[in-house]
Amino acid sequence: MKALIIDDDAIRVPTLTRYATSLLGECEVTHSLTFTPDWEGFDLILLDHDLGKGGDVSRHVSEAFPEGYNGRAWVIVHSMNPVGARNIVHTLGAGRVMPYSAILSRFS
Image 1 (tube, helix red, strand yellow):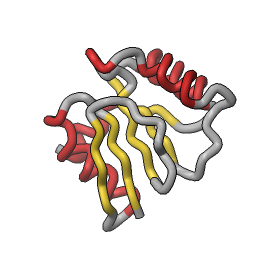
Image 2 (cartoon, helix red, strand yellow):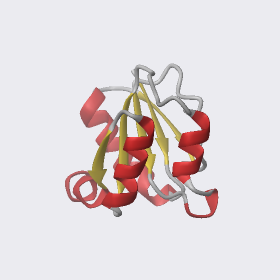
Image 3 (cartoon, one colour):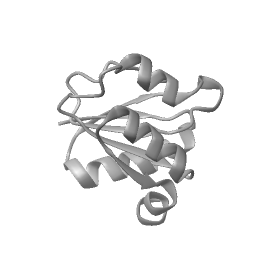
Image 4 (cartoon, helix red, strand yellow):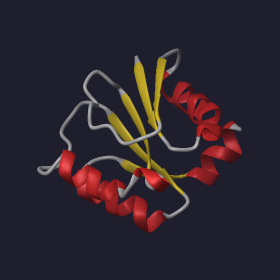
């Protein structure tokens, strides 16, 4: 199994990696600091709702998936901004929101 973590803060990667392995078990984890729409072959996508200087994630998602995301990966948008995260899930037409604070409290 394979997980993709899209997050501009490398400090969060170890915590998000533990979260991914709690969901998938032993898996290969790839990390990207910027948005990438190449989700083929991944079983889990952990997507930060705000990539800081990386740009507007909602815009990237709507450009990459204009008809919504219909791939096989389980998408989780992690955020400290629930409204922004829900907007991305709505744009994707798939996925769920997970507060980063909940992930941090269990997997840090």
